[in-house]
Image (cartoon, rainbow, N blue to C red; front, top):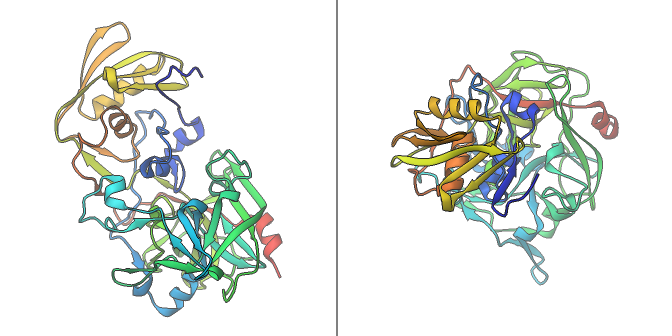
Length: 409
């Protein structure tokens, strides 16, 4: 792919586009957090997007949960970039040094859930004994050049609100661990009978005073089974989902679908059987966006179809987005569905005007494109979206035999 000197980004692969999925901690999440500028796939007009919150938001703060669930949360970890913590050698504590208010980072309305909280984590994980932590495959990498390189991460216990408005300001040394090695990992795209996304990592030392969470070793997930998760959505302090809120809707060979409430950052978090409290899977995907943004004025730009098929070049100084020469049907269809008026300027070149009041979901192709052309100033503050309680779209990886074999007593 030729770099023109302007913003050049690869389109996500066909497997993600076909499922309209975004990792709950992957590119769409990192786009929101500002770590990279990867666009969603150019959408197929036949696909629709769902939401990540179903009915009421069931996520509870640590201090709001029953003692049993607090103890389970105490054995989950936040995967945190090492450069976000500072170690004080005198006090022997790690202090948070790089965090930001979610409403400011993501241009969210202050009244929305968790908007005033700070981001710290990248992914979630669960301590399962023997100095081992279960997480998602896309949360850790053995490639030093990858943004998820395990050597650049800490695993942190205790990122929580102990009472309303009182976030834990620092972590004792026995709450922070490095990743010694990746014991087993898979990251394979495809449908739910093929997809594999899991990892088991070893800690640099046995954790102090942490009770291992138990893996379900015999029974497979089943439709109608009540489930919940504990994790670090959007990198925020730990959130504990209501065990009575969600259930399993479909079960495939490797992945089962639920209506668990999750955001980006929940990836790698444990999915529990609500009755037994045992881990039955690993949160890996959520469909669609979690926030919606509304244009505060008409917005016009030029869509040009003259580039290679595997790239989008956004040139804000020219008010132009350049797409692959074969992408005009999908792109223009999507823009028309968003209410755009389109006029032909030249062969392969169109003037597109999106109307004031048009709403775009955060992970959508159109939102990505507009923000890269004009930033956030053309949008009102984002608002949380909700899907009906009886819909679903949160994907959970079944526990693979590779992990069970290493964790069994």
